[in-house]
Amino acid sequence: DVVMTQSPLSLSVTLGQPASISCRSSQSLAYSDGNTYLNWFHQRPGQSPRRLIYKVSNRDSGVPDRFSGSGSGTDFTLKISRVEAEDVGVYYCMQGTHWPRTFGQGTKVEIK
Amino acid sequence: EVQLLESGGGFIQWGDSLRLSCAASGFTFSNYVMSWVRQAPGKGLEWVSAIGRNGVTTYYADSVKGRFTISRDNFKGTVDLQMDSLRVEDTAIYYCAKAQDLDYWGQGTLVNVSS
Image (tube, rainbow over all chains, first blue to last red; front, side, top):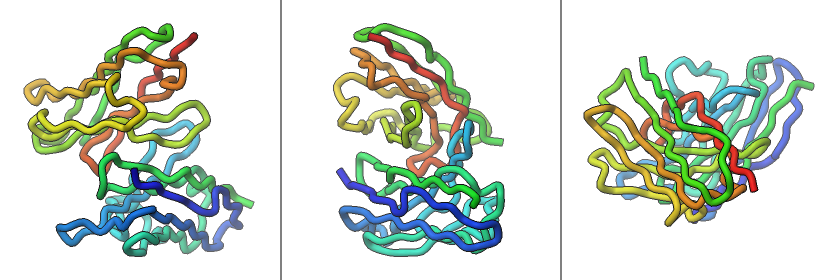
């Protein structure tokens, strides 16, 4: 199975400051169709997860543009340009290229 | 509006069986792979299973292979997860999610397996 490794596992950020989360996969996530299936999810306390980013860098509908995804192959990053209070929670990366699908351990973001 | 409503969770004993169901609406159900993901108390997300659009192709996490069976009814717009030989470590909130890239999630249903 593909192992997804996130870092850091926790992040304390000042409001209005940037934040960055790394996600590395044990195998390349490039698929034969030319796409790379790396997704990012956000889960607020007590809520279901919500997808933020799909195929590395595509924001889902309604996701603020302060969120951006980048990367290729085995190395990916989620960036928040200016953290807001509603961004607290846990962020997960997930690979959608190989079966079984696998998630990273999660990165907990809190406000300093 | 896409809606996914899970049901069937509960408190059960080790070794018992349970069947979860997810009722989908707001999209053309038969056009999408459907997935189940779980989250143990205080833990991260674990992908569990997925089923292809026609219900023939199925995928499972190693942790549930041979014990869980996913199925779907494209006429009713439902996807089920039959869970047999349940273990304490299967205790989790089980989420139904649309598509193989999980673009929409339900609210989840709690499965609590006691020894």
